[in-house]
Image (cartoon, rainbow, N blue to C red; front, side, top):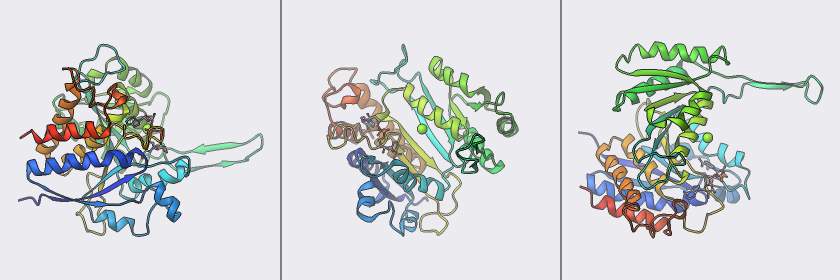
Length: 374
Ligand code: NAI
Ligand code: MG
């Protein structure tokens, strides 16, 4: 019998991260009561610019064991560019977590929800439903390279792409596994082997090799440029889309953009093969966060859309193995967003979705919906 008691590190960060977190925690509380598991929240105010402005660093010295004592990390958003430069706040927090815990998968669902207008014409709710799987630790985002002859005519700048067999194989295999668990059983790989003639043919080779282990999965590949066009022209044809760090970065913003407001998009930074568990010295927990940042332009107004944060919490409990509760949470989100179409919830939805509601009203609506599901 599985121990269904989970310790969650709650790291709200800055700006609207702090504002949307309470809604997600309340929804999790309701889900845990409904489905009979226990959550212990550990609240941390670091990994924020507020903390940095007080202490001169983004993290306390013992941040790592504190997070390793938890099953998973629920993260809000970090950034206050008016007081701390973004490269300090991001590298000093979320990017440190991703690297130190080897969160090599960045996973984003792209799903057109009812009641959410798509910027693409003529799309019905549910007609877009795929996930992007981005390699999150190596590839084009390496620090290998340099500059020589600076300031002269011969100024030369080089940055190398790093593909390791381990790094490439594990993300591709993860994507195949995801495809296997879904209805359409289809994997699309992003490449550019016509132009990038060493690393990208290697990526393609590894996809082809690993595909042999998954004869039940349909595989296709497209160069990144036309793939972006396909995302816009026929998003309904995708199921699982896998890409290197750079291509995945592009696709994982474009995908959610095709399905409406950034305020509802969630993401997971996963180490799916982490060994051991909370409390172990080597434990590498995964992190769940909304796609959006701290939104200084609307921070303090109480009008931020909490759905991205709630949906991130939903991905977290799914990852922890609470599939039934996760399904119920997603259903509750869908029901609330869809209710607008049936008339009457415009006082609940936040302004980014054309409503007159606020963070509290929308969060509360999802919470109530969840309380009614059994
Ligand atoms: P942003 O996502 O914070 O905001 C972009 C636009 O979307 C803004 O107009 C904002 O008002 C709107 N928006 C975002 N989330 C919303 C929500 N939940 N409800 C309603 N409207 C929403 O991106 P931006 O402005 O580029 O960055 C602001 C700060 O956030 C920067 O310091 C940046 O570095 C940081 N950031 C942090 C991330 C993280 O913690 N993972 C990710 C992205 C940005
Ligand atoms: Mg991006």
